[in-house]
Image 1 (tube, rainbow, N blue to C red):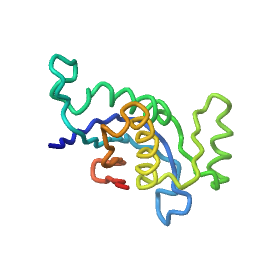
Image 2: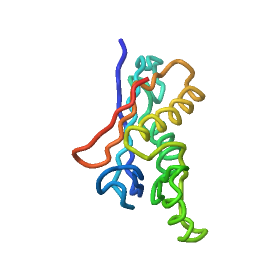
Image 3: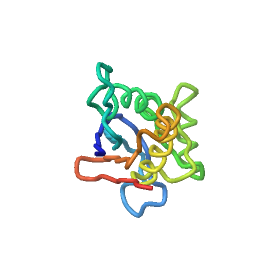
Amino acid sequence: MTTTIRRWVETDTGHRVPNHASKCAHLHGHRYRFEAEVSGELVTTSGASDEGMVVDFGDISRILNEHVHDVVDHAFLVHEEDEAGRAACAAMGDGHRTVVLPFPPTAEHLAAWCFHRVDAELRAAYGNRLTLVAFHVRETPKSWATYRP
């Protein structure tokens, strides 16, 4: 029997969608929620620390923190083709945290980007025992994007 769990981290992150026809073309930020949905069989090894779990939530938190949170928290996400956005970030000086992405930083693109980052780490640590089913990105309390391969 396969069981699915979810774990999330939140960040304060800035971005802009340079070609957007409305206010999202302006520099702004969100309190993002990045959520991994992981499935697998329950650990049945008697006496194991993770007995009865798909995986320890702390292990998923570590991966999310290292490969998502610590990369984008209090950073500005900018598309590599957004010359004005990159110039604005550069004007902030060397200490400004800027993450240059090969795509416009929409919730949809971020969900796919995070999926691939987290999936690679899960596969390295657990092989085929766990499956990253989906990755969810909440940009606002009313706006979510989900990536499923």
